[in-house]
Length: 178
Image (cartoon, rainbow, N blue to C red; front, top):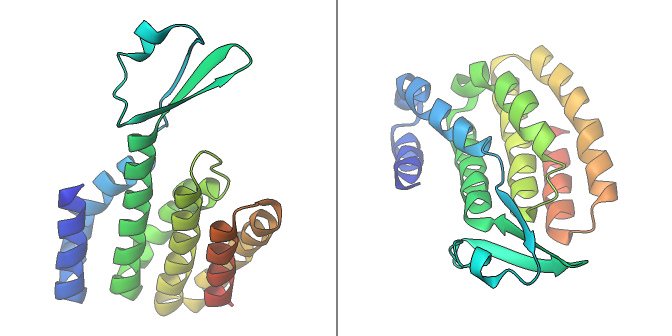
């Protein structure tokens, strides 16, 4: 995580001179953003089983006689990775365009419906708008095509989510794209 923050800072300082390093830093950040959430299902009375999970990294809830746990630290790392990719995309502008299709359609758009963590959904919406802006700086026609594909999903998720934070992020992304 510290390395990702350093890459973002270096990108902000070097701006376009950071372009050769995108090949090095982005694959790691994308991998982190694609990490699957760890989930555990235990018996509700199995306190000894829960003891093996770090209480600072896992949250548990009892539902219908079962204890469900989620690795919240993993979700935070996923969120931070998305935020960092969006920051780099915003700084790099057109230089980030070659990475936008992959970031948009294999990462950001699917994560607009990530129900386990509002922050991930918000960061995904921010990444959508940052990628569309980068694409527009490089090739407005390609950006317009991608924007059409993304706008529908942003509008759909903004209407269906009950999180004010996500709705705000989605509306901000829509405004940037339009």
